[in-house]
Length: 230
Image 1 (cartoon, rainbow, N blue to C red):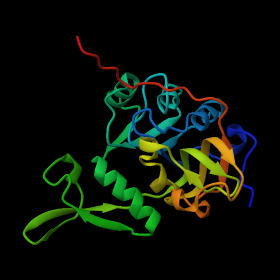
Image 2 (image 1 turned 180 degrees about the vertical axis):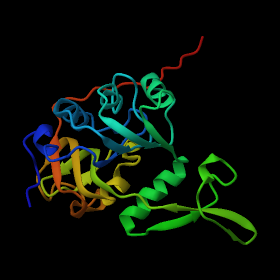
Image 3 (image 1 turned 180 degrees about the horizontal axis):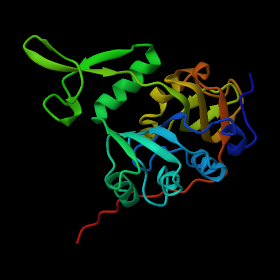
Image 4 (image 1 turned 30 degrees about the vertical axis):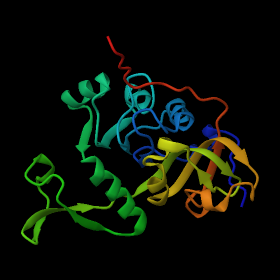
């Protein structure tokens, strides 16, 4: 029942080249930075990453991108990463852009065992190319497939040794739905507590969805884009 691993490097050691990773975070909030760094050090390549965005040039998934470890990105926003732009325009990186709500629902559906669903988002745009459409009550909808991954890398605030996780405020973002949609979920947290210390009513991700827990020793709060008044 004790799911705690000694280090991030140990927790990601069996992630193989070419696997599909579900990586939590929104901008730079709630990203599993220690797990990403462990993958960078390991050099695992040919990865398909599903994440809301690809970090920035020198942080988050941007580190794996710089290291040429990502083959494909499935994202809803990619505007803060110049290296992403360069690799995409040069044909080095395969990109699937997904409306943000659709991405969230595809992950939730994957975790719930739902193979596909219909949504109006993207109808009449490039997102609809090659996809089945149907009309319900006079409105056109696209068929979108649920997303599953080999591993989910997520960031929590607190967890116990059984893998029950609590997220802090907006750092929750995509993390909970990714836990349910992967074969193996690795959660890195800021604080580890003993079983029974977490309020059962406050647990966001039950331990049944988590296979590995890693405790981070420090965290850096970065701002993706700083905007100030003149």
